[in-house]
Length: 233
Image (cartoon, rainbow, N blue to C red):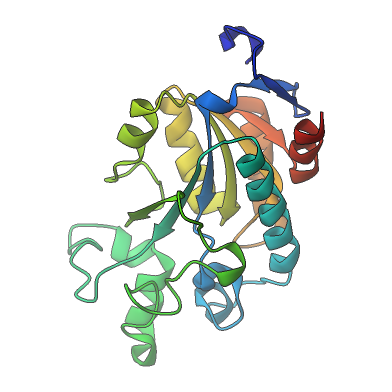
């Protein structure tokens, strides 16, 4: 990644795998993916679906450190959140696989008592968790598919600001985070996954598989502590 840096002025170096990365904060954004009550808190979508969320406090703490470090460096923070209107008009019709596979839609279809309560606009479940609430100046982009690039203005926002490097964190590592990261790679962005600020949906091997894929095929892997060290230097 170092070859894309044209000047040492303002460049920071972050310890990462498989190699350290040099980033210009002016060309970097932090993507916070789906850190919503649905995925973070007891009583949310993942919890109701029986997914183990016991590691979310540590994930949230790492996300807080990462966001704070990005703000100190002047790196813009972009929140992505998945949300549907009450009429589910953007969820996909009978020809779309989304209603069959997206967890909130599938769960509401199977459990009538949850209808209209999961990832629906204006509900607690869909809201970004209080511990990671956006601040003035942050950007919030709604999406209706796993990838933050699918049918959203994310790519246009990044390109008009000259962003080339993406620090990424969020839930779920193996679903929305990985989907967004892969799309970023395909569109010529340089993605860096903040490993401890992510959490998988499913067994631990799902987390390990995504980290392996990113480190070897799609980008770089770092930690919140490494980002803090870069700020300190």
